[in-house]
Length: 602
Image 1 (cartoon, rainbow, N blue to C red):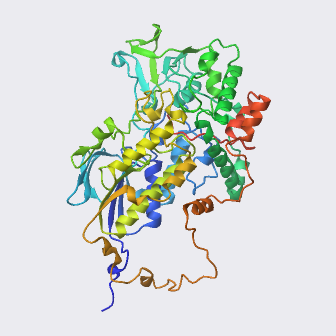
Image 2 (image 1 turned 120 degrees about the horizontal axis):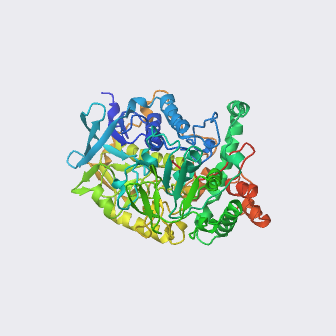
């Protein structure tokens, strides 16, 4: 009797996968699975009517990305026809929609489906998931072997935690759930907040409102680039050149990315780059505001990068000086029927209040996730015990994308998402080809990991005294949930799974994957049965260091001075206030592109 294919080594069993979220992370995972896997099912649930995640939800005035457009794509999927350097939310959303269409991922995605609960069934070794179809109100029940949470961390609006918000009789809006039908023409507006969203909202509404007051609790560090950079639009000739000469676009993308990755020492306390940035940005802010009587109050006391650096703030800073703009350097303490009272005792009246107060970044899921008598909502509300941005202890066969300890402000974000998707796929691959019942990171490992993160954060600015997304806007509330290193550091850390960090349980004999002695190569009629015979040793290196150096293309670039940025040092020496600072901190290219931090709206 001939051998049976199912008895070959590493035979692929059918695996069922459910992903919650169809933003940049969920879409990336769907692409990776479709590209490399077979014999699987994938269901992606998203509560919104369309894909794009935060770019679908955020629609406030001026909503845009402040990372250069050509660097806000997946690393393998450039878009040569971006309309401008800093594209608006609609254009970014259309990029992800087009990606789904081009790679035929729509068949996996179920929009307008709100997940209500997910429960682990230990006996069956599966997750039972309930979702509500928001169009029909029908409850959809499904089961999967692998459950992935790709809901992101910028999806739950955080309203000001002060009394009386419900007493205000005017219109209340939040930047993360903005009502686009509200007409602001001729209105008196209070804008609460001074983060990335507020910086975009203020200059957009200033020309049309009667008066706007911005309530600032803590000023951010801002970069004031030349207006020609911030508003730069690509000409038809430039777009055509990018289309016809992909190598030109590749060079631009690589140069910007190299610059962004080179900025990481700014996020380390007391480094040369941190100190230079602090002096330069402070000087720049004072020079731009000139005789403005509150210029000093726009210089933060905390290190550059502790709270998100705003890399494109020219229009915001210019708007502050307009006649119909008022600035209040005192936080809101309560709301009244006609406005709000700030801590300095002043009452500020308004027709409309816009709260640009960011997101709840607690990472506590909005739906119940239960396993072994534990509920993740309760567990993470008390203490986050995530594993390297992707794992959850005590919750088998479940993973996170953009979970706690992901590098979200250290450098390029989308490439970190790609690395996480690759990492999760390696576990799906092992599950599919071995008789595994369940996998989860060991609780003791997660405790050690968190201890190491806390130790590393002592040397990094995110652990300093400022409110940021990584401490859920409460100083000292928790170990910061950002990755304790650069994006490049994260890519190296997550490239190869540490299998001994995981508790892996098997069904039956763990060596059943060996099959009956027939290889997968035997079952491919077109495969070379002597594939290992070579002229020279062209195989991968056997040490981690050598593999990393090969991946990083060692020797391909001119030698650089380590932990320094030539442009920043030059600007410091010459004390260049505007144009030079723009070039130094954002690496402006001749076509107007810059190398700023990635940001999702908010």
